Image 1 (spheres, rainbow, N blue to C red):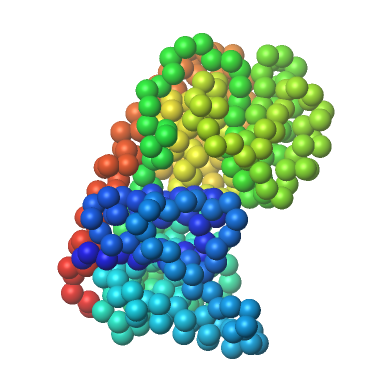
Image 2 (cartoon, one colour):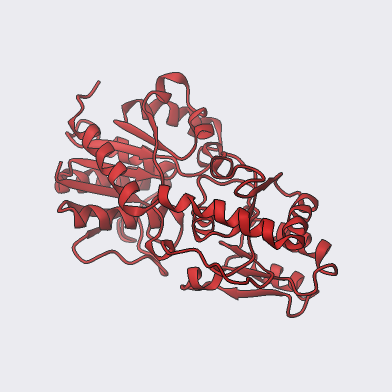
Length: 363
C-alpha cells in the first residue's frame, strides 16, 4: 500500500474535515502518495500540506442537467477520478459520500473504507438511507466508527466489519496542563447551531450568575445562531461574551475554569477531547451516540448531564465554582486523556489498520 485517497464533501472547518487533513499530513510524512478528493471547494477551508494532491469531483455548471441526470454525471465523474488515480485504499466519510465512494470504486482493485463520524441515525435519517447503508456497506472493506453505541446501529453482519478508531489530538493541544490560579471563566467552543445548543449554557449561567458575580461565560465560534445568542447574552453585559471564531483556541481556553459541551448529539467530540487534554474540568451532555460517555467517568474526570437540562448543568457548575480544589482534581484527571490521543499514537493505529485492510483478501 503506497497510495491513499480521501473522499469528503469539502475541507470546510469541521471535525471530520480536520481529521482527514491531519491523516493526509501524517501519511504524506510517512512517504505515501496522498490524494484528497472533494466534491466542492469552499471558503474557510483547512489548508492541505504541500505534496497532497487535491481533486474536485463536482460537475461544472455547464455539465449540469436535471436532478436525476446530475446524480449519474457526478457518479460517472467520480468513478473516472478513482480509476485514474489508482489509489490502493480510499477512506470516505459522512452520509452519501460513503455510498458514492463504494459505487464509484465497484469492481476496481481499490480497497474502500467508509467512516461514520456522527450519530448514525442523523447521517442516515430516513428508511431509504438506512436501507442503502445496511446494503452497500456490505461491499466496504472496513467500517470506521466513533463509539461502541454507534456500532449497534448496524446489524451483526456489518458489526464484524466495524472498528473504532480515535481522532488524533490537534498538536496545538499537546502541552503541559496550566497549574496556576484560574479565573471563573466557563468556555464553550463550537459552531453556533441548533445541535450544539449553546442556549443551554446561557440558561444554566442565568441560574447561577447572581451567586458567582466573578463568573463569565465565553462562547467561541460562529454560525447561523450567533445573532440569536448575542441577543440573549445582552441580559448579562460583560459577563456573556461571543468573541467569534478564533484560531488560538488552546491559548484562549487553557487557563479557563471549566469547559461546557451542550450538544443534542455528537460522534466523538474533538472539542471535548481537546479541553480534557488541556486539563480543564469539563461538563458535557450525555448525548447520543455516546462519545462523551466514552470519555468522561462521571464525577471523576468530568460531569455528564442530560441533553438540554440546564438545571442539571447549573447544579454541576455550582459544585465546581464552589469548590476550586474539586475542579482542579477533576481537571488533573481529565488531562490524563492526552496520552491516549497523542497524534503519533493514534495515527499509527490508523496506519496499521489500513495496512491490515490493504493486505486482507476480499470476502
